[in-house]
Length: 58
Image (tube, rainbow, N blue to C red; front, side, top):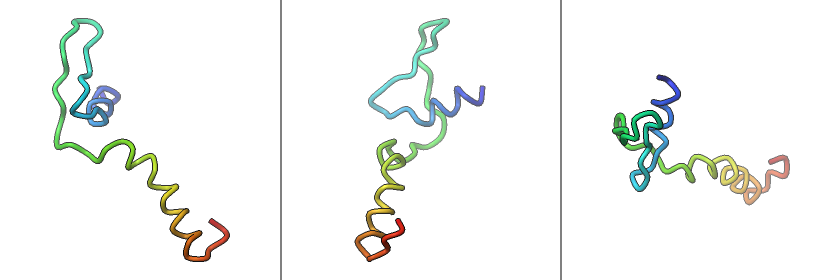
């Protein structure tokens, strides 16, 4: 159930997670989180900011 919940929370509103056994759409749980691309790019953007500030260890 935990993996299903995590998948539902990651699913963007433009997509529907379908139950493979019954073919029914699953409802989203809780409020919408940030878009997945923001989460994926956050570390790279933080490193880029550090590089621009002169931290060459980033």
